[in-house]
Length: 52
Image 1 (cartoon, rainbow, N blue to C red):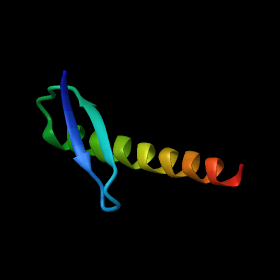
Image 2 (cartoon, rainbow, N blue to C red; image 1 turned 90 degrees about the vertical axis):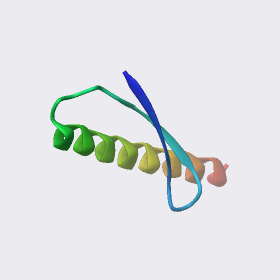
Image 3 (cartoon, rainbow, N blue to C red; image 1 turned 135 degrees about the vertical axis):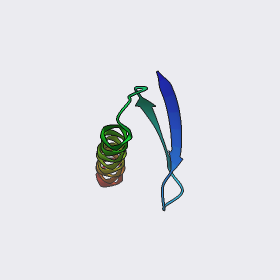
Image 4 (cartoon, rainbow, N blue to C red; image 1 turned 180 degrees about the horizontal axis):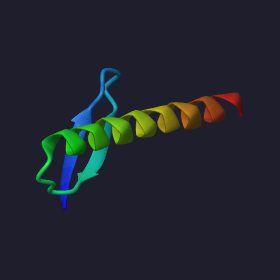
């Protein structure tokens, strides 16, 4: 398994576990979906912390 760290536009970092797949397209789609979900989830947590 390969761990890839991606820096997002707002400066936050997402570490994505990527399986070594023969199909690069499937791996790229998996990475994009995972990073998008993690970014959305992190923003949601930050909003919840801000409400308290």
